[in-house]
Length: 255
Length: 313
Image (cartoon, rainbow over all chains, first blue to last red; front, side, top):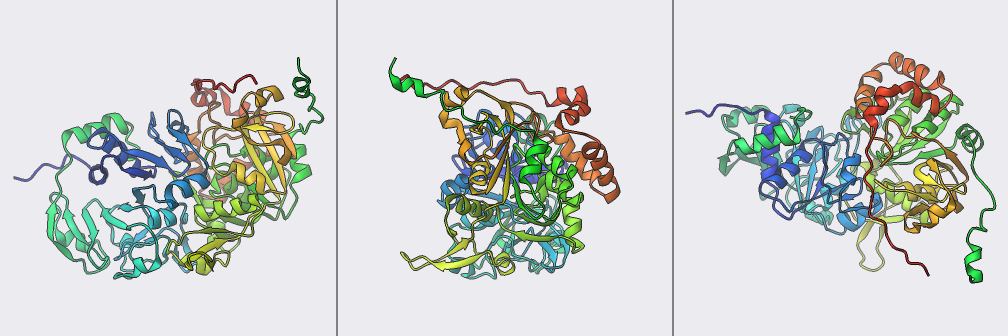
């Protein structure tokens, strides 16, 4: 019997991203979906999650859903506040961050991200916001997770611009750059989860309930490989949905 | 009482207190490299609006996040170039006016990542010729921006990325409280405030409150910006709206969302600037114009920290 779809694609992404986090992880949190995922994980299987924000806040326990990465509610009641230089050096560059969340307009076959420009850099067709902290997070966090809706235009074979790196052209390309972090470990979409294979190529590792491989392939800009142990994700459970809807985002700003 | 005690309190020699319009007129000139600091927090919108009113042109506007303040200044024709690391409306989307000017080829830009932008200020503030950072492997930006270079670490023989110092002509910093000489207490998100102030040739400091030097001296660990680097001090309550000042008023998230609509066309942007910048003499009038509903929405209840004991030596 088919399970009834009683959750939306964003809830599905938040829940699956939350499940990737481990208790005691130090997470560099972004706003929006990553923020919801971290707060959900903290309220379920990872009560000792340490949330740090690029604005320079460590151990935030926000009392409300922040719109921006510099919301005042992140500061009140946090463990520590430091300058931006400190957060990027003492925490990220030094290797004290376990997990970074990333997003972007384009993610390619090898997990590279473009958040800078569509078209030519000097004469941009579409000028996007640019790196922010993502260039460093992608390079230096121990593990990175990317959360994005699954659409063909977002998943080209090659990005127009490397704002932040995954595995470049695969193989030992990433290792040869000398960056310290492990790179993207999973891409969570509304259709499933992609993970890098041994060559650094993103392959289908899981399908969400009621999604077919063909559907994912149609929305991906390269010939997608399916991992041998490709599974179906557990649907969001009632408690995860209750926390999301009642506690974290009651106004439904992000979900 | 020992003679030592009498020295404190005798250091009030001068005041740098002036009006914001006078400070802008004196210290911000056409062609300057300006850094209006504050990462989401403490963004000195009142100073940006005053620069627009005074019609100062050809500025190079540097900020990690240009935010709405530079979107407005670019729309008003104040800038010839922007230097940035994240050109978005935080949590909302794009900065439409800057983006449109760049896509139309009418505005120069120079781009970094957050950490390299902040490292430039660190170099500028420390009097160093460059700052090193670890490789990120993302070389596309370095190919477009010659500010990124590589040098060999003389100790390990490995290559490191280096960025040059940023030393603005003028920096504007908003703080919670300062004395008349510009010794300033800052708390909440600290961003690049301190580095920007030390990196700059000239510093305009705006404060929610001007307080007695004794209050600053009561908590010296909180003095992130010393008066010695400050040129002008202005008392400007609510300077940061629609950004915020921790403990004084909330961030106006509704306005950040509304700006996404306002800035959709040049016409609607111009109409906003006319009504809220050109037709308003100063920040006090702007704040009153926002009205009691907005004041109530942005009101924040106090939550005090535990006092610390410095000891009576």
